Length: 94
Image (tube, rainbow, N blue to C red; front, side, top):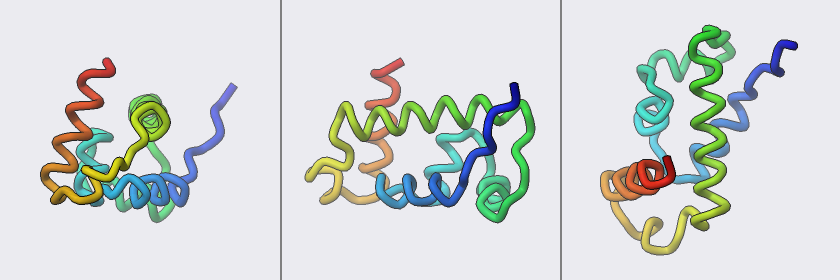
């Protein structure tokens, strides 16, 4: 059974809620910014990227629920510190 296509409008809403830049989101998904922008504009994901993206999106949603992201100290942090904190949480949740 083919999974339902990923709705990148919702991914963008998630990215903004988590206070991530487009560059940060592309890094997390393991692609270039241009590829990410293509997906946002409706370009189809390669089969090889689909599961990777779905897995990371599930992990990001878990960070939101399990760690109450973005917590006040993250909101107050600068972008580099915010991304570093998110990576720290993601690396600890493997």
